[in-house]
Image 1 (cartoon, rainbow, N blue to C red):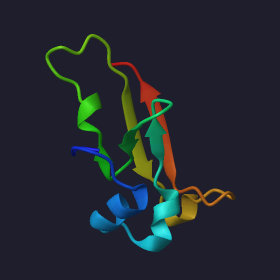
Image 2 (cartoon, rainbow, N blue to C red):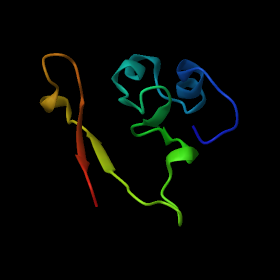
Image 3 (cartoon, rainbow, N blue to C red):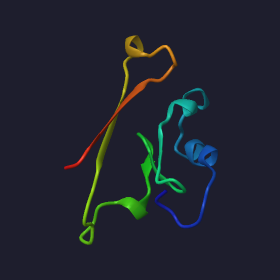
Image 4 (cartoon, one colour):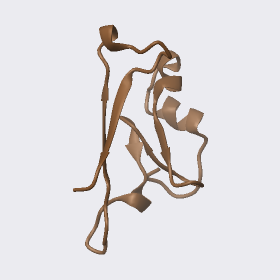
Length: 83
């Protein structure tokens, strides 16, 4: 994600100062094999929109307020749309 080589998600989240108690709540978007985006943390450079991009999908995510937490403990809302 924005770097050469590979790195464990736990190490990346630690490097980005995501609190341990919050890490299980970070949505992970994958293309099947590779991580594309850690919502609210970092996006893979490989998937950034550039001059050669033919198609794109816009994903947005926002944290839920404390009173919006779902029964399953999730705290975010994700929306996928094509710009």
